[in-house]
Length: 194
Ligand code: FES
Image (tube, rainbow, N blue to C red; front, top):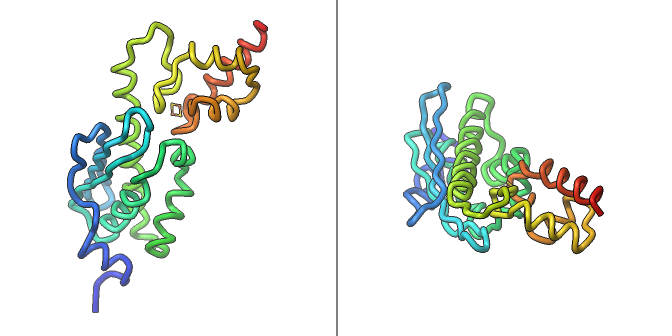
């Protein structure tokens, strides 16, 4: 009899996404004090389309952590940043538990570590976009590399009134969602100027 439930055991023995993504441009590393496990996600994200092309992980953790990281890596590949629902923790946790069943209370930190490490990898990608930014106006949406100027022009020329309309027009705001208040500010100021 296995130490782990069947779904976890399967991934524990044959995870499909262990390793390092080739030419990774997003790296997230984290650890938990609960059990001392560490996890590292490496992602390759297409700079133009913002589609996640490859996701791999490495860990010294238990079967629950391996299974959770393996499911997350699998779920994000082929997905555009805008389709990640602002990395909503509840949605991603549902994805994990939909595949693996509910985690016991004592192993919930494994699921959380997997989620948190993936978020760190995406933050790393955003940070790199800021570093590489050479435009004169501020970079507003670091997930999609959209500048203040582009958003202002879109709002002004297309009479956009909501953040959702801006996202539909240029993707800004459709990744992690952290730039949405800034987009709202641009809409408010541009609307006043018209
Ligand atoms: S900075 Fe993440 S969606 Fe804009």
